[in-house]
Length: 183
Image (cartoon, one colour):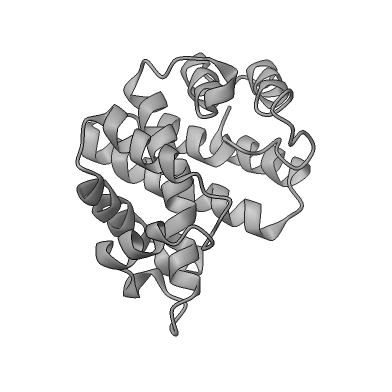
């Protein structure tokens, strides 16, 4: 599956602009970490781009991301991408036993949260967000209430990295792509 094929599939299945933007942001962050870890940018980017492509059609835990992963496998997505996407939801029971799977899990919720923090800044720019601001907002349970804080903490722990260092890397990746992402 090429990046162009993936984008076309995402657009076919995802009408909402915010979910498309989330996919692009997670893709950018995953590509950043692929470069940093000597992994394939295309593979890691594909996992980031497609991890929630089926969410609008199949939002229930019984369906997402399982049904989407079946489609991805049929369309030629690499098995490691399909498995990482399955593992990004704890309720699937699929273990995160590869660096790709661990990174996708660690970046998904945190990427969305960092962007939410940016959107309440006067500038609405992720360039004006720092680790301290993210940590402060993480303590506010009503802010971006849909973000599971335990998943954010668990993601960094599964990577074996300090949470503040992980937040800083995610912010760095988003800031480098802020203009392209529109944040």
